[in-house]
Amino acid sequence: MTRKAVQDYYPDDIAICYGCGKSNKHGYQIKTYWEGEETVCRFQPQPYHTAFPGYVYGGLIASLIDCHGTATAASAKHREEGKSLGADTVERFVTVSLHVDYVAPTPIDASLELRGQVKESKGRKVVASVTLSAEGKETARGEVVALRMPEDFLSRHE
Image 1 (cartoon, rainbow, N blue to C red):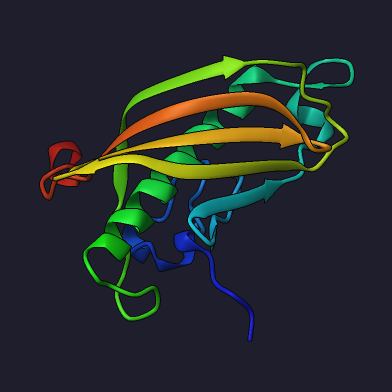
Image 2: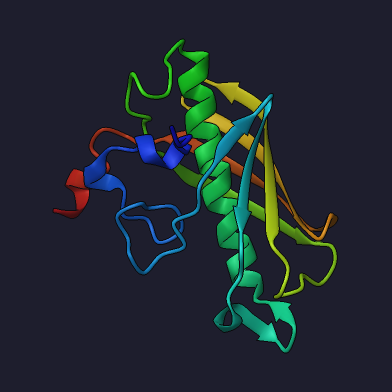
């Protein structure tokens, strides 16, 4: 049996995010998994993700940290509430704040690894820290402040 990612448990009607939506055929479709007390995601950048020859575009790095951070937040809250993946859908979280530090150039030809940890969980808010590494070297780190998606969030745009 294949292990499912956090994003596989998002409700189908809102699984269209460009970064993590399983239903967005044009998006990254990142996958977040738990490994102990950390979440992990691996992503292979493509040649069109280039900023400068040989290096990844910083906007891609920020969006990977963003989506991995919100998946970390959503699944951590899910666990905290005693729910299990597979038995319940995972409620979506939205980004309130995203901070990214670029600490070294990120090579385009390397598989990227993101690792997330929960720094704080209080009510509807979860703060996740995320590191991004290429070839075992940290190249970026970020913090995502995420809130459980309000029930009326989607109705505001109908």
